Length: 191
Image 1 (tube, helix red, strand yellow):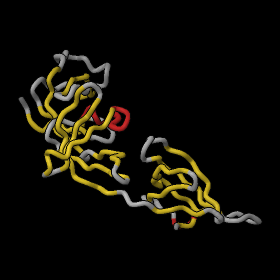
Image 2 (image 1 turned 90 degrees about the vertical axis):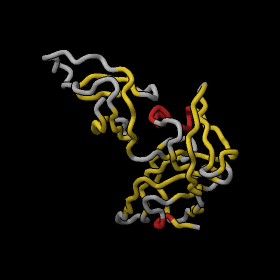
Image 3 (image 1 turned 135 degrees about the vertical axis):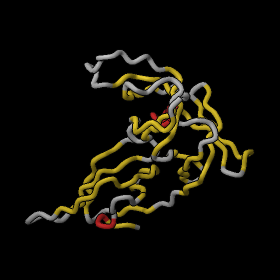
């Protein structure tokens, strides 16, 4: 059991009456005159992905939970389902839906190794590498003098995702994308 002042950033716990695991994103210990101290938290529900502000009091207790991190390989995506298998165990397959994958699903290609977070036997989240390299499949031509859009254009990547890139990026180029923000980082290979 954890007390309210042990809920540091990164701690994963469950709340009384709620079986879902939560992760502490922000922590601030507040002590005011004439009042009991409290912990102001910003927590994320690891199943639904919702972020909540919470005030934890000294009479509350929280249960720390174990989340297993397992390396898995992405196989393919079809009809809103993302299929994976455990690394080294191609027969141990499982699927996740669009609501769990979120925007990260548009930046993952076949045979990419990612981390799966398991709560009990259920996979609750997938973590991609910080950056991925993807090939540009469609890119409109750059028009000379077209800097009204800040010198960027929208291209389509091999996974079907669209991203804003500088005007010099062309079809067939390989670009590096930040998986957390979905932004262009750099050109890796010129076509």
